Length: 334
Length: 164
Image (cartoon, rainbow over all chains, first blue to last red; front, side, top):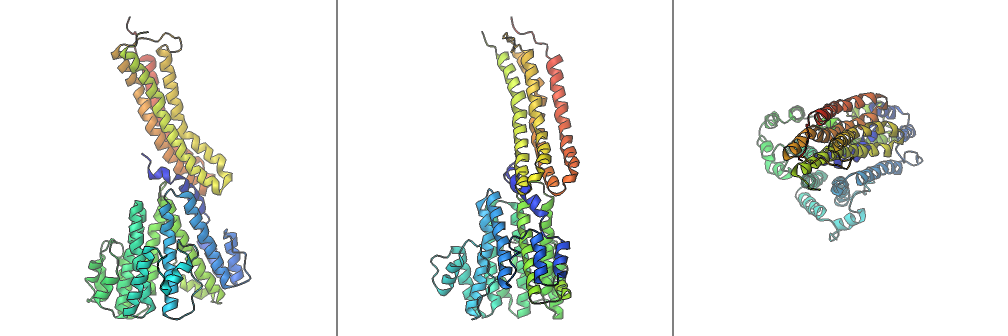
């Protein structure tokens, strides 16, 4: 009679307390207004960020802080969820991220970024070896993403093609995982991510001047809007895509992105609008009294918070003005 | 002692009155306990407030036991001279305990869900404890009504004479 409600009761209880410790608008403003990196780190330390006090060095500190919180998030999931697969669902994102970062570093001969996640299920050394050609230890889903990314890069030697190919494999994998877990809210969220990814592919492919076949190939099936429905308007004026997403909740996003595309403005707005759509859905989990939704919603909210924190700290480190940081975070949802 | 079908039905009635609300209460209390443990892991100071919410779904089990206790007295279990009920009287006993058995069982589970949701309120706004307690107490109303119905039926609605 209780099912999932009972299984996730403990997790719900913990998440209800942890939600109160997420950074609110006030703390984000204080971080932005802090005179320097040190000041922003103090705000994080007050908010319970475990490693925010180690503040002598620059880059390692930012990585340490976010890695520390990622570790805590993974530990929370392990301790509270009755579904061990839910942990993989989160850590797999970090694996795909690491694969992207290292593959781009290798193929474009740039020094490897520091920005890899440390708590993936597959260790960084295995991914590095796989990129060098030794793929036997690499999990199957990552090996498939690696070969898809290499093939895409052979056709179009641009970093963006690696991003698209790896993301496509990641969403395909996450969607299958979410369905196997049987948590409808999680499936809904991943389907929304898939739709937003497909919309992003649609607009970016048009901006890059790629043909319809490229866009259709890069999109992931399984979302609420089928790739076929999206690419149907590919050769028409940009605003025609709005009709393709009618009734899905993505109309405003599609309209604004289409206007940006038509006027030759940057597509950065697309990312912001996508986040807003996702955030509205994540927020709904706060009103579900019991079940997996509060935990899943918290996981997504925390990942979003870590992205914000990284963005602000890097901006502080590079000496960016408060106004510029505010502009970059305009309408960011906290 | 010759056992009649009516006696078996009578004892089944006692078992239903005690067991079903007991199962419901255990489920409800367990649910609130799980959610409460999650909160206390992060914030041990909230133990007292959560305990108050946790005891609420436990009352149905007590009502069921009381109904069963009165029925035991009525059937002469304590005197050692158990009334040899007719089959018809046995069915009447079962009918009399059904209100508390069914309502007690289901209301305890639903009260547990409301109280577990209230744990979330306490986690975020401990000063608002009275509100989730009131919400959970509203579910109690129906358990109390069912208990009264069963009690009145057992005490005044069962003309038990038994067979000679």
